[in-house]
Each structure stands twice: as C-alpha cells, then as structure tokens.
Length: 299
Image (cartoon, helix red, strand yellow):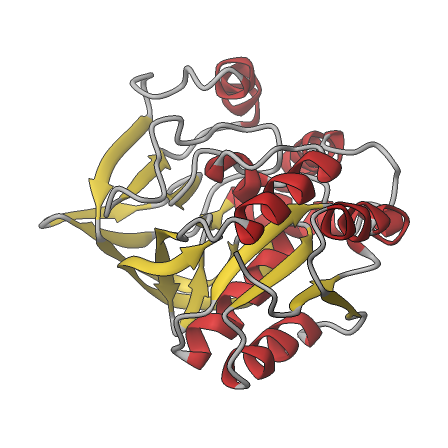
C-alpha cells in the first residue's frame, strides 16, 4: 500500500488528440483507489523524456505515462538516462500501442488505468523487461532499418483519422518509392551478410505499426531480440507477403530470415532511414544495436 503522490505525464496530442479527451479515465481510476496523483501534460517534442528524467532524478519511485508508443519511447529514454530504480507504468492512449500489447497491458485506457491503480495501491512489485540501445538511443519495443522505417516516416505525415490503418496506407505509399536498401553489411551471431535488404527489424516485442506482428515469437523479458530481415523484394513480392505478415505467418517463408540475437551491427553504403519504437531517427549508415537485459522496471 502506498500514499506517495503518483506523477502522471501525458501527451495531449497522442492519437491525433484523442489522448487529451481520454486522460480523465486516469483521474477516475486513481481517485477510485484513493491514490494521490498529479497530471503533467507535455506538448513539446522531447518534453516527456525531460519530465520523466527530472521526476526520476527527484526521487520518484514510479512514473505513469499516458500516451502512445512515442510517449513510452521518450519515457524509457528519460528513465535510462537517469539510471534510477524508478518504475514505469503505461496507460495506452496512442494509435498502435505496440508496447502495451507486448506487455499484456489492457488496450482500453480505462481498464489499464484501473489495473495500474490497483497494482500501486496494493504494492505489487514491478517486473523487469529488456531494453535495447542503438547508437546511444534506447528503445523498448523495436528498431527498424529500411522499408519499415520509411513506412514509419510516411505514417507520421498522414493526418487521416483512420487509426492503425494509417500504417497500411503508408505501406502502399512507400511501395511507390521502392522498397530496397542500398548495399549493406549485416553482422549477427558470427554471421556476416552482404547486399541490399528490404528491411531489418530488431524486435523486443512482437508488434510494429499497430497491426503487423513482425516477430510473433518476441518476448520483452527473455534476454534476447528477434532479428527479422527480408531479402530485396519487388513491389509485387511485398504485396504478396502482406497477408501472411498481417497474420504473423511470414516467418519461414522464402526470403524472410529470423535469428535470436543480443546484438547486431549494420553498415550501409549510404545513410538509411531508421526508427526506434516507431520514432523516426536521423539517417545514418552505421548502426550498433545491443540488448540490456532486465534494464527497465514496469509497474
């Protein structure tokens, strides 16, 4: 049982503004359990990361973030930078909510807030999950290089109110631009592979883009990533692969490769798009990815 005030940081713009309309469910749940709390909105890019870092450095034992995968990404980076034992709680208010799915957090925000309030009230110990690091930046759900990163960039610019379908629309638009990387070198588990790819996904959780179980076997507490990469594919080949990808049945198909890894490296002939937890990163030609087992505590 706890009486400490709980910090709840939220992104009002998550899910194209839906988060601002839904944040009241957190208030309602915490009030129902008699938990003192304070809401802190963050509207600027990087604001959640800074707010979480400051709260952790100030001695907060737990921080709740209400928002989408981008909000969780910022929060995780703030906590990892702080190097504290602060635990993270998540209320999914985003579009895809891939991290929440991976953690078994209810997709309904009201149910998730209720569960969090109950766990905090009864002092349920946090559980440890794995964290990834790429080029000095942390991620909790996955990293992507190549076509899926380009899809993330396109989806970020689509303002249509169509939920998860925004990522499917981005796939079709991305196909018009081409779907292969320049020549690169991929190193993992002592294997060195040369040549272009369609994509390389380093998954801590199963889902990307809300609706694509790209690594259905991934678990974020098992001490390993699932590396999934695809040979260079043409537009029609990608289209033919989509139905099995949407069902998580693509692993083992021709041109799709999978390996469990704890680190890998990608070096490309020219800068490539990449994403971490769906957040677009500056183009780069050298990517160092490593696993930090059990590095984050989840309420």
